[in-house]
Length: 306
Ligand SMILES: NC(=O)CC[C@H](N)C(=O)O
Image 1: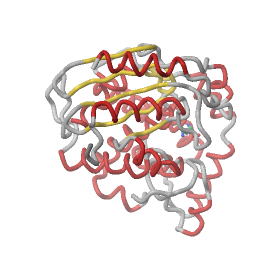
Image 2 (image 1 turned 45 degrees about the vertical axis):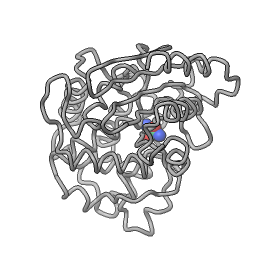
Image 3 (image 1 turned 135 degrees about the vertical axis):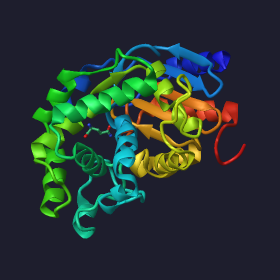
Image 4 (image 1 turned 45 degrees about the horizontal axis):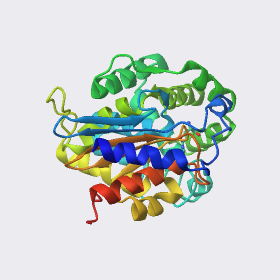
């Protein structure tokens, strides 16, 4: 496994086409696109990594997997009254389906869906309390108390919130959000601004590869059925309008973020985190997808067979 991660890192270092760093969040525009990291945490307790695997980066939409897990824990199937579970086939920040579909977002991983999920988690609490809950959950599953929010990234997104604010106000107009829009957005931007390294992310995702059990503690995070369902949503919706392409090339449940990270789950094997800040047209890490394609081919861990 170590040889494989080293080979992938060497192959990615040679790539000249590295995509474009997200600049609609100005604070992310400063990140050096030359960086690449990869980490694997296996269900039998092994850890491997290569490249810049200990450098924290903005996990952005990968956080949506963690808030979905928390929301399902609080509301169970009640969550699905306000959030769908179908791929959208549209960009992550698209508004078009909301009008046709009564303000109900297609799935929890597009921005509208994740905003509805965090509104559901808040349950009348202040953003600070909800954020403390999200952070302590992430620290627990990653088994690492050092994980923090990057306040600068959160502030940068709040200052440029027009698009996400439109989504939130639109949903509120349909009676889909219960809390004040700016409080929901502030919470959402902070959750997206959690900074983690590939090593921390792979560790955090491990419960999804092991039927819902947190490997270091042996404690159950979610039921096997819930882990399977979260994985299915990651497969169908985790890469927005490129989810089909990701399933075709990689064949693993995965969730991307505009910080350039991707968390992929190989059920029964392990969790893999990759990071390369340059994005493709759909806002997914260009080299991250390439690296995972190489990883899935060499391990033959695709859920669709060899
Ligand atoms: N795809 C993403 O990572 C988008 C998340 C980002 N915080 C946004 O709302 O635009």
